[in-house]
Image 1: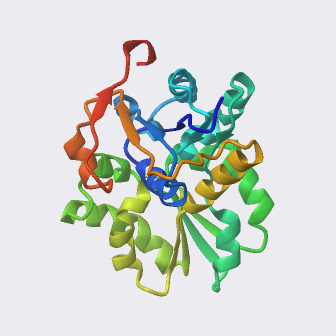
Image 2: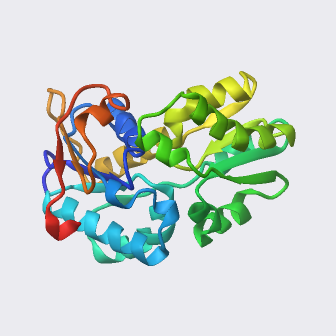
Length: 265
């Protein structure tokens, strides 16, 4: 393993691009390899067994691409599969978790809302977070059906999308939530709509920056941060029918999207 090897990132679809863009911002010299497992999106509708199998397959693919570290840019996959991945693979593996702890420090009303998939909210890992940090705080749990699908289509602000967001955010606001936790990597792409509904006084927390910082810390600890002076590259892969055009609205520049090799489908 050498410092110029790429960083691997995967998610159930394009949502993890919200994490990839933060990694790119904080680590501009790194080469990045991203896999959108769009054939199986959303993970929130899949069984635990399927999610774990997909996480293993995608990690195997990224390991075959010589990834020096892997980011599981998906709350659901992290909750269900990250311990299995860490037991099977030797590279550093960084996961996602809803920002419950920061939310408890931000709230003024003592009420926070967690927007996530049903799988994430039902996971034992999420329950552990609530036990560890939720004492004395009212935590409202809100699954968000349809949100992932809208982001996958690149439909970020249509009346249909706005209606879906309103149905989930409105009840949290009416119960006094002044801090909203984005518990799925697809959801940051809906932040403008969430902000328009919630208003400027509500705090919206996206853990992507913290994940990028943890990745940087882990790579620094093992002396694998790239020392190159030029900007790094991005390579995108998909298990589904994702096209470069569908990525353009979510990423900062046009990139080619390649089909994931059949052994990893």
